[in-house]
Structures are given as structure tokens and as C-alpha cells.
Image (cartoon, rainbow, N blue to C red; front, side, top):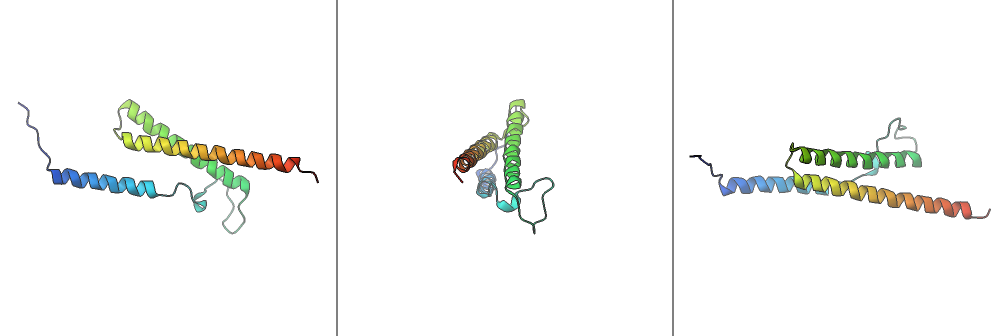
Length: 120
């Protein structure tokens, strides 16, 4: 005969509220602010930031989202984690950041083509 312990509903409710507050704070965090762009060999803050540095920072940020989502998915697949909601959020965040990056790339390419087709 096995004995099961019953957790009081108030304790479970408190835990769920804490989890929801944590998810809310994560969801409200900014995805990428201009001050968070960290690139290797970046110039000091007093000098102007180049377009290439901004693009490289965005690429690194999107890559980081992709790696986190992949790691969380692997953990779920291997049974190391049961955080399915966190994994799905990370996956969607990686997907959205990649889609945004592709749209920016397309706009930059379009602008470059417009500049190249102008007569001087």
C-alpha cells in the first residue's frame, strides 16, 4: 500500500502564481535594445557605432536565441527537462527574431539595389 501526500491547494496556488509572475517578467523583457548589442572588438561607447557592428550584433543575438531554443528542445527530447512551455516560448522567440532579421535583410538589399540603379 503506497501513501500519497496531498499538497494543500493554497501551496499549489502560490507556486503557480510565482511561476506565472516569473513568466510574465520574462515575456515583458525587451528582446533587443540598442545598448545590449555586444560585438567582439567593439569600439568604445564614445565613438560612433558602424552599421556593420549593429548588423553583427543582431546576427549574434538571433543566433543566441536559436541556440537556446535548440538546447531546450534537446533537453525535452532527452527527458532532462519538463519545461514544455519554456521550450515553446524559446522556439517562438527564435522564430520571430529570425523572421525579423530576414525582413531587415530584405529591406537593406532593396535599398542597396535602389541606390545602385540611381543615375548620378
